[in-house]
Amino acid sequence: MTELSCSSLLWRLVPRVTALSPHLSYSRSSEETYKISALTISPPQRLATGTIPPTPTGLPNPEKGSPGDLPAMDSVSAMKPPPRDLNLSSAAATEKATENNPTGHTANPFNKADTKKLLRKLDLHLIPFLALIYLLCFLDRTNVGNARLVSLEKDLKMKGLDYNIALSLLFPFYVLAEIPSNLMLKRFRPSIWFTVIVVSWGLVMTCMGLVHNFSGLLACRAFLGLAEGGLFPGISYFITMWYRRDECGLRIALFFSAATAAGAFGGLLARGISEMAGVGGKPGWAWIFILEGLLTLFVGAFSYWAINDYPATAKFLSVPERAEVERRLSADSGLSQEFHLKYLIQAFQDWKIWVNMFITIGIFTPLYSFALFLPTILKNLGFSNNKAQLMTVPPYVVACICTILGNYAADKAGQRGVFLLGFQSLAIIGLLMLITSDMPHVQYAGTFLAASGIYTLVPLITAWNSDNIGGSMKRGVGIAMQVGFGNLGGVISGFVYLSRDGPRFIKGHSILIAFTSMSFVLTYVMTMYYRRENARREKIFAEISHTDEQRFDEREKGDDATFYRYTV
Image (cartoon, rainbow, N blue to C red; front, side, top):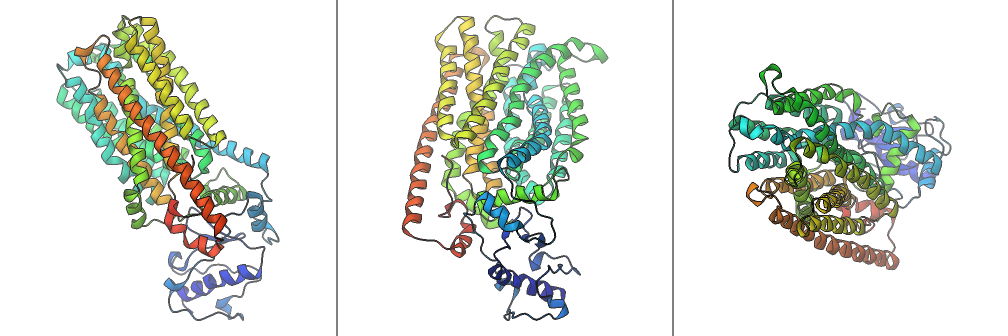
């Protein structure tokens, strides 16, 4: 018997054995394999040449000619995996997968304490390193704002809008990299792809400290955008491979809080490094770029070993823990995880993703404007260059705390829309304080509110969009679309605060209020839509019963499946 026919016969046994025994369960893992208890059977077309899947106890072995009433098969394409119970509770699903398991490889049912312990283990092994590399990413992207205060423009003979152009040039290239990067992340191992990203931008950042003219700075900013572009959407997508939808917001907030830490750390670091002016014949701003670039390269050298690829291959997890992580993900979504072109097309045709893209640009424009120009804004309040660098630290510290607490509360509440509306309002209030008062202390207090609101919004909107996109590949593309379009706000941000509008920058603050207000209105619209759509689907389920087979058939519809519920 050929390898294909053998594997096909065994594959056809799955529905029959499942029907005969209530103790065997079916689930779809992130690695696209089908599992019966402790036995993992790959679809026939995925089997390596020359391999035959093992036969579990109690199943007929087609290779040995064991008896079994197997129907004839016309083709492999005619085969269909068995349905699974999409509404199975966590404890019931685990018990169903483990009862009467002769191998003993599957864990006992995970209770609430076990699940909390598992999540803490995931957090400890995944989040710190992701936060570290994102801290370096945001630091290297925005340190040009600190370099400006130590003679960058004078040394490179920049004038007029040259500085604003240098800021904005990064973002078109940043956007270009995002969707291809997430497709590469879906296709290849995260440990490899993230290492390529980190090492690439570390090299570019180091080279930026060696430029001698404005053209060299522009070239480095463009390459920096290409190198960094895949990191934020990549990490956001990577987190969805490990956590359920209602757990992603806090984890995205934890790694994104590194951006606020970068703002605080960047000011302190730039203040110290600038004292190296003249060392090796290089100005202080050059040393900011060189040392921060070398630090990135150092961290990048360990990325390959520090990043775990998938739950199924995580060495820090036991076999039962790996199974539990994958079971939780499968139960949370119940949708297709396949790599297929049609899911990319679904993402581009989904109007909800496009609305979220406009909400995101309404958040990212204030984000980058604030990050790039806060040192300049504080300097124009009457502080010296060195003091302005240090004065950026407290607003970022407060923003970091708000980012974590706000997203933690949103995860616990199981809602994001109302939290987005609240922090959008907080950001608007802070920006209004910068406009309406000419007192430096009131304006400085406004930077605390603005930073806390703006930075907390980023993980909230990223998680909200991710939560409401069904299917692995569509989600990866949708996140990249959202973040890519949002990062066009970086292009706008370079021209929000112009030197001629100083020292009050009323025009710039007003532009940011307009963008935040737009995102507020669209957030309200989507919140109402999600609530009504969930209610409509609940009504359908109450009136019409759906079999497991029908639900399985809907898997490829993504978030349009009637059993799918949106996060409000």
